[in-house]
Image 1 (cartoon, rainbow over the protein chains, first blue to last red):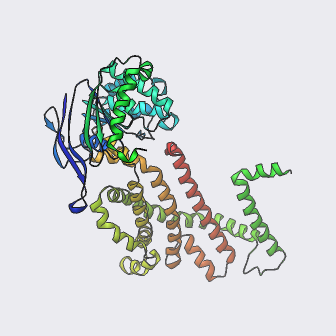
Image 2: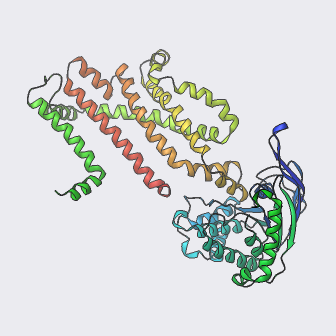
Image 3: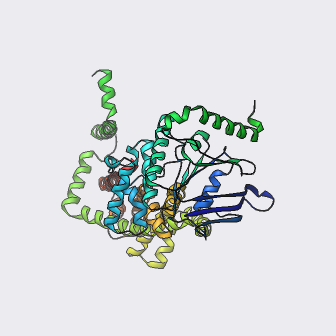
Length: 256
Length: 257
């Protein structure tokens, strides 16, 4: 799998009222990679993801997957939203099965893959629960299982833990990291949290606002495991501070 | 009774409702029993009960009620059945919405009973104009309420289905339809009240049987006791339909409670 984003511009509105929200964004993503886009609100990072998902159309430039241009949404790009997007009338298992049913997979196939992915996210016991009976973290795990079960080439994660409490956030980061190691999934993570990006991704792109653009890319080379130790290791903190400083310079208004 | 016990009693929602009804019944009973009000104007509860009994044993009451219920059922089923696809189409498609919404907004404010003269000219005095009156009086409200429900389907739910490989019709039937089901049932419940009102209006104007017809005949013979029987039966059937919808909603849409 090869996702290529080249010279993508996006503006909203027409004529004089048109506002450029993405200026010449380019990056790529290969099978097994975990890439993060980090930026403040208004940096256009969510727009990049919606363009890749095919939920919005680009103004100029090109996005392609394995050479095929993206023209609309499709099951090769699974997405997990910040707000819990589970179907409230379906049980956890039915939510996981939902995408596979839309794809027209056979019933036994759907059943087997549903229990497999419930197992993968550690929620086999909650198969029959309605979403409202699950905690926020559990709901996001089901949403991830649902996206993975549809067998996407790339998993798009749009601030997936943004609405969770800090403790749950940390355990979900751990969970996602292990999931990545275990299943070898390919993922693009959108976050405003630099630490989260550095903990999870092996390549981090930093975005700046007005107009949204990529300003810096970092290859993450520090040894990750275990995550709890990495969070507080001097090398990690130094890297994080260096990047955070760069982000602050980009937004002079935020400086004291 | 202590204060606490009183409050606990008031905590049961139906208890206070029952007290309200009993108080009215008592006032009714005493004002007729004392002779303060002319029996012709206000028959006693017992007289109404007896009139009801005699209408029941003669079979008239059941026949009238069934006639009215049948009209409401057919008219409302047409209205609800057509409002569902039209409302979903309007909610999901901007072009269809812009095309139809002003038209519906206008017709909606024309009182349905004002259509009765036209309906009689076009379709005579049979069943069709009555059924159509109920249709006209509820279709536009049903449609616009369903349209609104569709517009409030969270964007994420639809987009999730799209990124899972869903397209067009499956998204409507598997995401939009189940999500709006509780609001649709609620819209039906609310507009069913109008349908029930309209059938009585239609029967007051022209009918050979039906609860509305029975009331207008009773008026001609100054049988206020029979008018009361008609009014009470109309109210009870309406209440039963309302409770039926609530029950259906609790059963079918447990996730939304």
